Length: 277
Image (cartoon, rainbow, N blue to C red):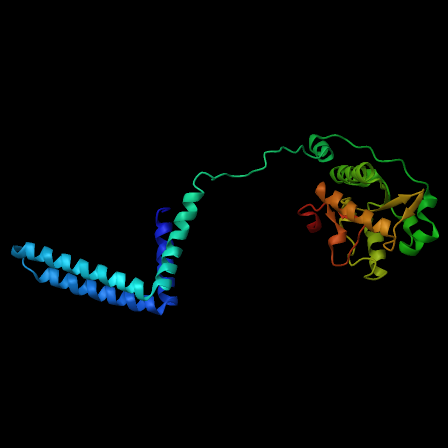
C-alpha cells in the first residue's frame, strides 16, 4: 500500500494543476486529442503494412514532440510551475534519505516514593492530636462554625483512604513546607443532615450522600505558627490549597477544589458501589 502514496500525491498535484491553470487544461486537451487521432490511425492500418504503420507512428511522435515544445514556448511559466511541484516531493525525499531518525526519551524516572510506599503496604502513622482550642478560635468559627464537634479520629477513616491522606500530608510537609491538620474526617448521618439544613453554601449532600459517612472523605487545613488557617483570602493558603489538590490527585484522591461548588480542603476516595448502600 505504501507505494500507492506517491502515485496518489502525483495524481492530486496533476488534478490541482489542471484546475488552476486554464492554459494547461487547453494544452492537455489538445495533446489527448492528438494522441487519440494517432492511435486511431495506427489501429486502422493492416498488419501487412507494419512498416508503414511504424513510419506513421514515428510521424505522430514527431508531431507530438513538436507540439510539446511549442506548448512550452507558448506557456513556459505554468508548465515549469507544474514540473517544480511534481519534482519537489521527490527532491525532498532524496535530500533526507539518510536522516530518518526517531527521537524518544530513554530517561527512566523512579516512581514517587510515597505512592510506591502505598502500593507496597508501608504504614504511615497519624500525627499527634492537636489541642481542642486550635479549632475554636474566632477566626475558625467565622469560617467553620461548630468545628469543635467534628470528628478528627484517624482510626474512623477507611484504612486505604487514611494512608493516602497521610501520604498527602507528608508530601505537603516535605516538598512544600506546609503543615496540614485534619479538621473533620468521619461524619455521622445526623451531623451530615444538620450541615445540610444550614444551606447549600455549607453542603448539598444529605445523610448517606457524602463519602464522609463511609470514612472515605476528609477536610483539612493548614497550620501556621500554631494557628489553623482555613481562609481562602490568604494568598499563602490559596497556594497551599493548589499544592494540596495536586498532591491528593497524585495518590489517587478526588479534590473538591475542582468542583463547581469548590471545597478546597476536601478530598475523598471514590469507591464504586459505596453510595448505593
